Image (cartoon, rainbow, N blue to C red; front, side, top):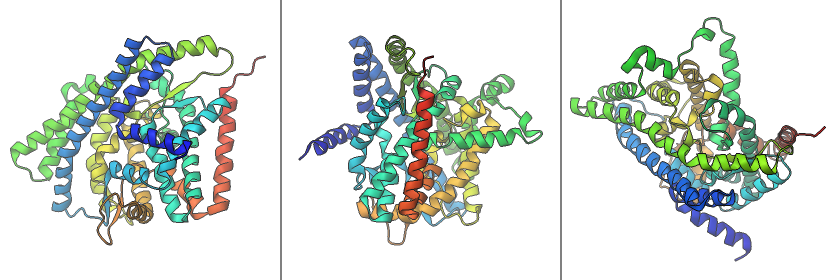
Length: 453
């Protein structure tokens, strides 16, 4: 076994521990390297780990209660489509067990290091768990082209674009979210929505009347009291879904309380992430100030968007979008994908949309709806190759003739673009998207480097 295989085996073992174990180890090591006292670094790492455990518990609570209700709705009202939603955990398993998935982690770590050295990025991406997104696009391209080389190339393009977009959006991200200085979001599913959020938001501002509508989640609390609280909206939507699913009265109330609990508990859980991040963030800023003043604009810690999904606007828009998307998906002409298992993952659509809408619930909802309508068509278009990749890895059982998809990462515009250029246009497309990506790296480098006069 060569060095690369040993490295990949070791990293894969750590990945297999899950983010609740992996992230505390990484954060503790980073904290000590940055000069944080050992006890404080360990405490920071543990807070992040506890945050991931808590978030997993809440997400499972949401999925286990929302899933059956949504499935019953689909059965009662005939909300059936041809493509099965298998959710992101199955997609991640398919990605990591593919031929490309075995190479993605060490290759991406090396690329990140190289780009940091040449100042092509300032993001130190420690969100290793979400490298499965890059492995996913690589796996379907490899299947479509019957080439691991094309697949790995697609994964690399996805990774580099994610780092560059993380840099470009970091200032706006830190300005909008509290205590997020020195943090960027390189997770490709999330950051890919940023340019669309900017563009659609600009378009909405040009529409008379619509540009005057500003619904703020915090303002809703002040104006409507209990009626404007995310917890109350969760209860109302939960009861509504339970009623439409023809639940018994007690079960309707139970689903309502569970949805309300999710809306209330997620912000409390995500506050643990922030508490764990603060010492690391402060140490990073101090190091940059001491060692890199006048040379670069500083380094950023690339983190999971789980840090900020507890924002009130994200919770409100997600809970409102679920029933709308559910029924709209059936009515969309040509769409064959009905999001069911993936609905809990809608929380991750909005972390990089909010900084552009400034938390405006109305605009955020419209942008999220537009992107998810587009996502349905993307998932439909990629279902065939996704299913073939799943069959090749053999990680999940799929009935003959059944196609599969999910929202994350198979409904992402970034996945669709990279796939079209690398899998369909082959060499010419790969060269074109490579030139485009390199151009963004050069532009990003110019932004990152401060030229002394």
